[in-house]
Length: 228
Ligand code: C5P
Image (cartoon, rainbow, N blue to C red; front, side, top):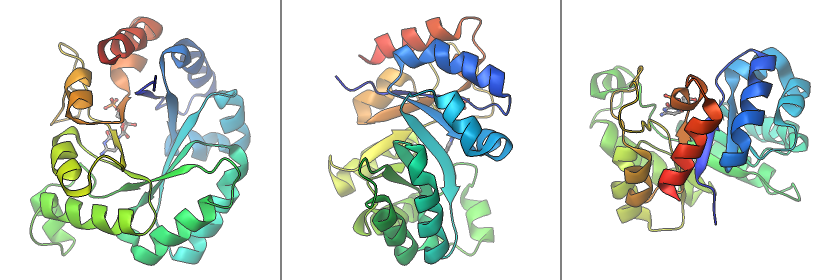
């Protein structure tokens, strides 16, 4: 059975990352490492922390197509299972990333980020995009999927619209998840693990409810049990 839980290990501290990964990995399908870890420790630190576990490397690449393709090729030897790009980089950039990923024997899935959940309608309008986030998410999701992305990172509240528009095939990877009774932190629009999976999430990304729990392994195990 697919293990749908992805634990987000959001720390620049290598020893802490390693300890958390060892504790939670048995309960997770993948471990997510992002910019704060990768920019501090680089590929070598990544490989040490990953220690063979499947990794979602969330660097949200966004540049001209040639540069993004080269960046994906530079990442391929690390063996991450999932990489992220910004769909806003456009059709050619998305296609270049997908083609570069396809050159690896165990090619990583390319996931596209559409509209950052930190942007509301007003923030999006400031960037010149009228019509609001819902419309822009659908527009960028279509662009990403038509140009070779395997899936999308999306809010739980976008799952049903995306499934209606694109069907069951795209991988939907969903952060902003909070088990009932846990602190929201800076997440405003959250959903429980069970509800997100019931709505059609392929994977849920959970950070602080696991990493800041008194017992991270138990927290991950409880979430994994809730969605199994
Ligand atoms: O701690 P928390 O569960 O809020 O962590 C969620 C993780 O998902 C973080 O790594 C965060 O960067 C990421 N994320 C998010 N919202 C997005 C995209 C990624 O919270 N739209």
